[in-house]
Image 1 (cartoon, rainbow, N blue to C red):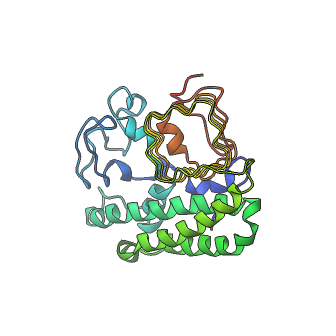
Image 2 (spheres, rainbow, N blue to C red):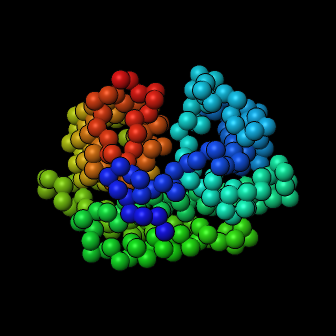
Length: 278
């Protein structure tokens, strides 16, 4: 089980992508649909045409300018190296083609489990959720056990059912933490359509933004402390000058999908995307 998260995020080391120890699974296993995020259509199980023989991307430094910004946003939460080096013992799909189909099937399953571990690791550190700490710890242990299953068992795993159980626990955690935010009324935008919303300078402390569509929303200068951001879609949202310190369940992928500035305040466990304004 991963260590509880530390202020610098070091407790999540196993949940961060290590592309050097992965067989480019995200470049092969996943479907790409031609759109603003990807310049081409690609079927699942088919290597991207930019993938080199050494499992590296041939346009890694030019992904955004070449029409692949979606690749710069994607995060496997460390599932790539887990499946490559542990589940399949370092056998790659090119050298051992008989492993390819199952490897590509298992990768998204482990990715979901590792994403849950990212959230649970954070939940275990939240003081207001202390009454749930035992349940959170048991959920961590159960999720890690599942991620260690052999390939056949992972391929047959009902990951949606497990995800549902963990999601319910995380929702209870969120309620306890958000209740400590200042103000009597906490905004509920769970799953809401906030595409292009004008929320500049908005006080969203303790808001429920779980699964909200915030595509191209103006959140510049907004206060998002203690807001629940699980699954919120921040594609092209403006987070310039926003305060995200203490935001709940924020991921690097969400930040990478958004726009921001040097004045955007982030949790210490996450990094400022290279494409953000300085």
